Length: 403
Image (cartoon, rainbow, N blue to C red; front, side, top):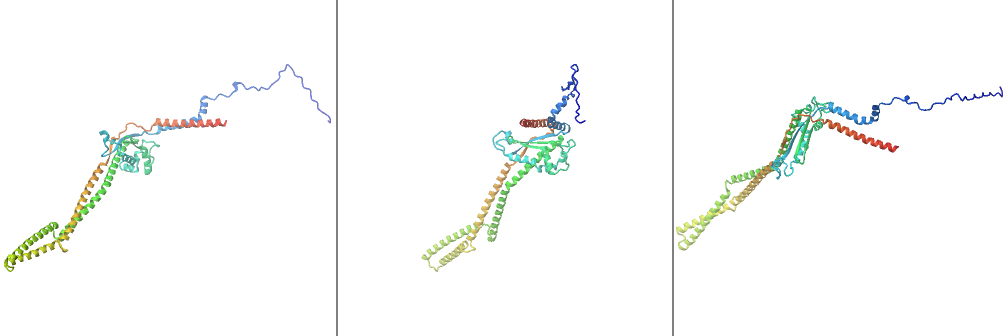
C-alpha cells in the first residue's frame, strides 16, 4: 500500500446537447405573495394613536352626556341693592334702581352676593329647605348628584356653590342669582328662599348700622338727662334747706325793704335836725321823732344784716343759688343739644338705609338648560385634538432631528 496513490477517474466530457441545471435565484411570481391587508385594518393601524388619544375619550364623554347625565333646570332672578337716598341726576327710573350718580350701594351688593354663597346662607336655607334631599333627587345621575345624604358642612357648601351662582354687574348694579336643580320646582323654591335671605340680611345690616349710629347720640342724651336731674335735685334741696321757694325774689324784696327803711331813716333824721332848731329837745314831739329815728336805725341795721355780713345772710345763699341755677341752665342746654343730635343721627341713619329691590322674580323653568352636552363634547374633542396635534408636531421634530 506504500506509495499507492489512487488516481482519479477522468471527468466525463460535457455533452453539448444535454441541458445544464442552473439554480433559480429570481423572485417568486406574484401569485405566491401573502394576501393584502384590508384597508380598514391599515387605517386603524395608522390612526391608532389618534383614536386612543382623541376619539375614545370624546366618545366616552359623549356617551356619558347623552346617556347618563341628568337634566338640570335653572331658575334665575335679578335684584339690586339701593340706598334710601341715592345720588342726584339721572332719570327717575335710574334713581329708582339706584343707578344715577354712580353706584353707592356696590359694597352692600357685594356683601349680599358674598353672603348668598356662604356657610350662613346654607345654614339659613336648610331651616326651610332640605338641601341634601333637593340635591339627591331620583332624577339625578350618580355622577352629578350629591353623594352623601348627610354631608359635612364643607361638602354641602362645595356642592351648593356648584349649583348656585351669584354675579354682580358693576356697570348696571344688577345682581343675577342663578340656581340649578334636578326639578323645576326645586330650582324656583331655592331661588325664592335665597332672595328672602338676602332681604333679611339687608335688614339686619340696616338695623346694626342704625344701632351703631345712634348709640353715641343715645349715650350723650342719657348723660345730659342725668345731669339735668342732678341739677334739678340740687336746686330743690337748696330751696328746702333755705325754706325759700325763690331766693332771688326774696333777695330782691329784702333789698327793696332795706332801701325803703334807709329812705325813711333819712327823712326822719332830716325832720329831727329841723325840729332841734325850733323846739325844745325835751318836748314830746322831739322825743317821739327821736324815738322814731332810733327805731328806723335799728330796722335798717337789721335789714342790712340780713342782706350781708354773716354766714346766714342772703348774699352767700344767693350766690350759691345762682351757681346752682347756672349749672341747671347749662344742663338744660346740653340736654337740648343732645336731643337734637339724636334726632339728626336718626334721620341720617334712615337716609343711609339700603334695600333689596327685586327686578326679576325667580322663574319656574320649563326646559332643562343643563348640562350643555354638545358644548361639552365639542370642548373635549377640540382640546384633545389640539393636544394630539401638538404632541404629533413635537414627536415629528424629534424624529427629524434624530435622523
